[in-house]
Amino acid sequence: MSPEWLGYAAAVLTTLAFVPQALKTIRSRDTRGLSLGMYVVFTIGIGFWFAYGVALGSWPMILANLVTFALAATILALKLRYG
Image (cartoon, rainbow, N blue to C red; front, side, top):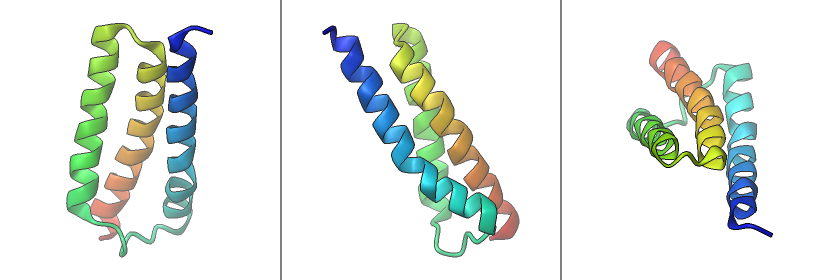
């Protein structure tokens, strides 16, 4: 088993952990309990992790952070729109 499979397992688990919160927020549009500052910093951080994955050529890191960035950016946009 190559170490890359550990990366894929970590990527799948951490991305899946974020999906229920993202879906709940997208469906309800209720962002009152979410911190704007946290989502700004988190989304920027995920963008940097994505860039780092691209620089390394690490597909697990690229794919996981691409999906997580899309979800986090959507939640951030909802937070900015609905407060």
